[in-house]
Image (cartoon, rainbow, N blue to C red):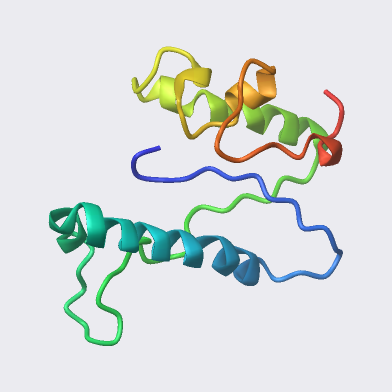
Length: 125
């Protein structure tokens, strides 16, 4: 989505830190996006400026976002089409597989997105 991200993340161990997982995802994305803007769109980079010397740019909005703990297989299975249809509901595409950054085409077996699905870890549906 242009202004937010949907992810389904399943920690592999019983003990984990969601903040560590989010940092591992968000930090490299922010660094790559800022580097891209520095070289390709300096005007866009200005939108991320903080005015601070120690942290000159802020890629992610403040706050933890909207996290939801999925506690059952039926809720997990329902979450996938909800996420895939988000760009359709917003009027950005006509079908979920048209959204370049979606896993919808992978899910349907009609193509591949930028991040492959770990089907072996997903419950049968």
